[in-house]
Image (cartoon, rainbow, N blue to C red; front, side):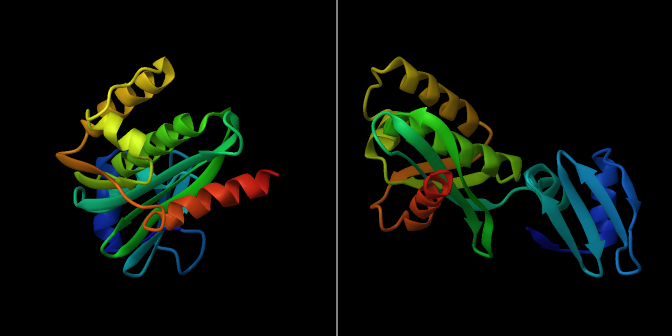
Length: 198
C-alpha cells in the first residue's frame, strides 16, 4: 500500500490535470479521495495513501514522474512444463514501491522467467520511472534480451520482442544476470504463490 509524502493540494491538482475526478473525503480526517484504474487515493495531512490491487497508474500521477528504479524478477515452474508463477520487486533508494507474486497456469520455466520480466517492466513503466536497472537470475533471458544469445523457440521470441517494446518506454535501462541469492525476494514471491495455489 504506497504512501506518498506530499502536499495534498498539489496532489489534487495533479489528479485534476490528469482528468481524474476528486471527491470529498469520507471522514473528518480525509481531505479528499479519488479512484482510478481499480485503485483509490485518500489524502490526509501531508500524505496520500493509495489502496487497491493496481495502484501503479494512480501513484505515477501523484508522484513526481521520472527517477530510477531497481527491478528484480523471477519465474519458475514445478515441472517443465508444470504449474508456474512469477515474482517481481520494484524499489527505489527510499524502499519498496511494488512487489508481488502470482500463478500463471502451466508453462515452462523459461517462459515463466520471461513473463516475470514482462510484468516487472510493465509495473515499473506504470509507475512512471524513466530509468530502470533490472536484475534476474535467468542467464538465458538476460542474454537473449540483450542480444548476446539467439532465440530459437517461437514462444520465447515473442516474449523477447514484447520485453524490448516495453523497454523503449524508458530513457535508460540495463538488464543484468545475478546469482539467485541476490534475487532472493523475487524468488521467494514465486514460491509463495506456488505454495498458496497447492
